[in-house]
Length: 453
Ligand SMILES: [Zn+2]
Ligand SMILES: [Zn+2]
Image 1: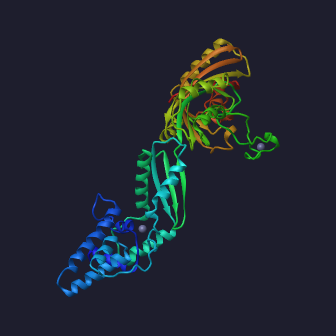
Image 2: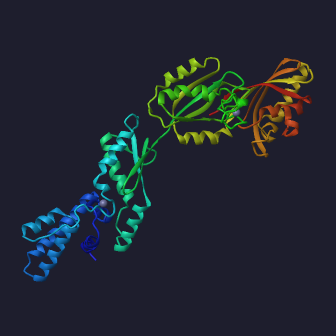
Image 3: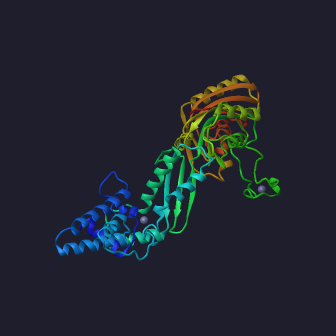
């Protein structure tokens, strides 16, 4: 069966538009649009029949006339109509407003779809786009039945034709690149035969930096009230929050102002406890700003403003653009990367400097570059699995401040429970500083002074 036979089969029973005709044979011939393909097919078949019509053979002439009528009446192909008119043959188009059986003339009216997309992004900054489509089941089922009935094996789907053609026009009109993986804007069309909708998916802007937390008592990210789960109740003063403020909430407002984002997510390279300060070079973080209208930011200016507003509480630095991949990498590294702590420790009994120094010597021998067995700390056991983790301690140093007050510098593998390393957590952390000193030791103040990244 030739493609002309298929063409006749199609138009004897259905009317489809020239775009859809080209689409049905899309895998044949490369480097042309479906519209050109459809047109060429109709035109060459018209020419072939016009040639046969001139032949002196009565049979051939009759078949040619029949075919030209199918082209003129059923395919509504104007060159075939002209041939018949010029040769003085009649034809009649029975249903002149019949719409394409496959696309309901959607491909003849793409400008409506394109204009709406352009309207939606009028006030948004972006560099790259992609078009995605989800045609409703009526469109898909009709097309599947049509292809199966006529045994059409070389076609391109409604969806892929639409995505390509519309994507090309939008990207040309707006002078933006078409990008298949990770575009700034994804236009997601939901299409039915009668109506359509566009969902706009805007890629998040990711900003990496480091933060210092200069005061105790604030968490890294906002916590919902435990009592009401964020709905607002008496115990949280109807704020829905467990803590009034967090590092995240101090940092984000300036970014919201600048990007006009509607939501955000704060990703930290690990987190310190609420009562722990984050000093030194700061902790790496990545702020994800969702649905931003502006992507080009004056990071220096934002940094200055955040630091001015929050002087004495928090500080940010080293701001730069980042991406989702780095968030994943940062999260996976947090468990293993080194952290250095400054710990102020109180002992239950007083000891002298000599005793202290000999304990420090012992601490160094036992801990430095050794693995520690640490069972999940009691204070977090309600939200973390009860397992034993092996954590490496890299360095221990100590300073004698008072007979019952010492300062330690401890460098450990990420995820070590430092308070428990001091107090032993009733034997759950083994060995511990309390065990070596043979006196109960309590961590009074803890500061993170370095996070390797
Ligand atoms: Zn069509
Ligand atoms: Zn509450």
